[in-house]
Amino acid sequence: MILAPIAAGQLAPLRALLNTMTSLPGHADPANDLVPFGRFDTLHVARFVVLDDETLGDLKAYGTSFPDAPVYLAFLGDCDGAAGDLLDALARDCGSGLRRIFSHCQGFVDDTDLRRWMDARNVGSATQYVNWIGRSVRHVREEAALHEALAVKLRTIPTGAPREVRERLKSEAAADRAALTPLPPAPTAWVIADIADLVLGVIILLVLAPFLFLYAPFFLIILRAREASDAVICPPPSLAKMALIGSADDHDVTNAFSALGSLKPGLFRLTTVLFVLWLLNWANRHIYRRGRLARVGTIHFARWVLIDNNRRLLFASNYDGDLDSYMDDFINKAGFGLNLVFGNGVGYPRTKFLIGAGAGDEEDFKFFLRRHQLYTDVWYKAYPGLTTFDLARNADIRTGFERGEMSESDITQWLALI
Image (cartoon, rainbow, N blue to C red):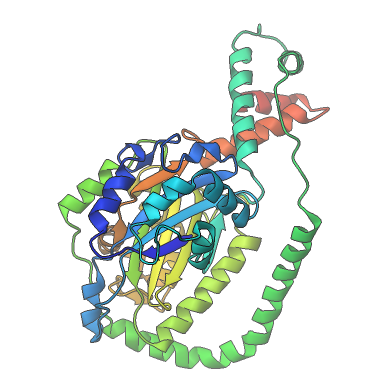
C-alpha cells in the first residue's frame, strides 16, 4: 500500500486522470495506458482510492479535531510473492504512468526516484486477510480454464458409467494438452516462519494471560462507562454519495469496498484496538486461512491499516455479491468481530462489552458503514466473473482431475462439480 498526501489544488485533476484508467465507473481497463494491470501475472487485485474523510467533524463529540488531516492517494495491491518484486515491475514497466499519477502528490517532482519514493510511502497493514493462502493468479486462471474445457467436453460425451466418462474426459483433455502448472510446495523458509509465528503468538497470549485476567475487571468497568457516554453518529448517508458509489458496484460478481474513519481518542481505545487487530491478524494467518473469515466466505482479500499515527483506520476489502448482502453476512455471522474492531471508531452504534449490540442495530450500522465508505476510483481484479466459491470449486475439479484411483461415488461428485 503506497500512501501519499495529495498536493494542494491537485485533487480534481488527479481524479480526472484516474478516471481515464477505467472502462466502467471505478473499474480499471486492464490495458489502460497509465498502469495496465493485466500485464502483471502475479497481481490479484489492486486499487487507487482517494482517502477524503468526510466524517472528521464527528471528532467534535470528543472535544477534539483534526483540521490538518491530509487527503491521501492510496494505491493498494494484493500479489503473489514479494511485494518488492511487484513494485520493481511496476516501476520498470509503468514508470511514466505512475509518474503522471503521483505527480499530483506532495514531494513528487520530475527527477524523483520513483521506486525509492514508493518504498518510502509503503504502509504496512495492522491486519490482513487472504481467502486461501498459497493460491496464485496463475493457478486460478489455469483451473478456471480447465473447468471451462471439461464442461464443454462433458456436453459432447455420450452418457455412460461415471468412471468411463471421467477417463474419456481425462484422455481428451490430455490430447488437447490442457496446461496445469504443478502446485509447488510451500517454501521451507516460509513454513518455518509460519510455525514460528504461530508458536510466538501462543507464547505471547500465555504470558499475557495473567495480566489480562487481572486487568479484565478494570477494563470492563472503564469500557462500560465509555460505552454509555460515547456519541453514536449514524445519520443516513447522502443520496448523491450513494449514487456515486453505487455507480461502480455490481459490474462484476466481486466488488471493492473502501472505508475510512477516526478512532475514538485516548490511550484506552488505542490499546484496545491495537490488541484486537494484532489478535485478528494472527488468527487470519493461522486459523482463517482456508476460505472463510469467521463464517464469512465471500471475501477474497481484506486489510485494516492504521494511518496518521494511529488516529484513523482504513478498511479495504474485495467481496462477492452486493453491498447489502455483504453487510448482512457480517451482521449475521461475525457481528462480534465487527464490534471488536469498529466499535472503537468514532460514531459507531453503541456496543455492550464491545462484542454485543453494535452491528446488531442493523439500520444504524449500515448508515455508519455507508457514511464512512469511499468511492474507489480505480479497481482491478485479475479474474473477473469468478467468486471465492468458483475458485474453491475449480481447485476441487483440478484435484479430481489429477487424482489416480477414485471411487464411483467420488467420481459422481467430481462430475457434478463440472
